[in-house]
Image 1 (cartoon, helix red, strand yellow):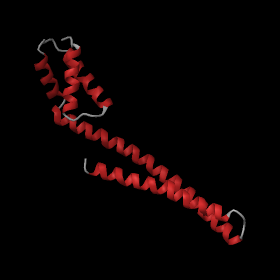
Image 2 (cartoon, rainbow, N blue to C red; image 1 turned 120 degrees about the horizontal axis):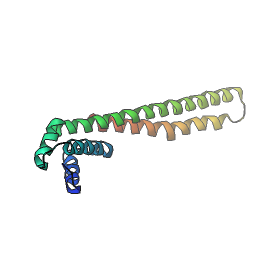
Image 3 (tube, one colour; image 1 turned 180 degrees about the vertical axis):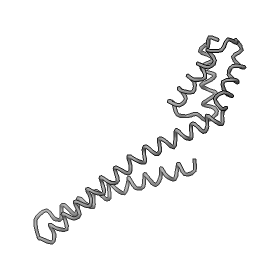
Image 4 (cartoon, helix red, strand yellow; image 1 turned 30 degrees about the vertical axis):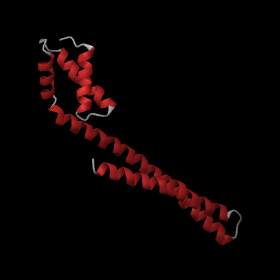
Length: 142
């Protein structure tokens, strides 16, 4: 069967309606369903569409795929946030130790190093920690 633009729009809108929000996943699913329908000889779009849905597991399967995609994106973002927390924490620790050493030895720039450590903590680590906590709470209830 040769699909028309209205058929492709119907499939896209149907998948969006049933919970597929990620554009890459949506495009892949539309492509797979269209390929399945185009390879069949029948001219009844509705029957072929229902058959394709059953072949791919139905709308519940698509919702599960969307959830898995969301969790994979969250996991990737979590890894980046953990690396950022490690780098910022290491920078803060180095500045703090150097600042304390400079302060004990009464060398110049000790206050500058300690202030830098406090600024890295306040404007680097704390926002990243709060953002990570927020993202965990959002995906906890998904």
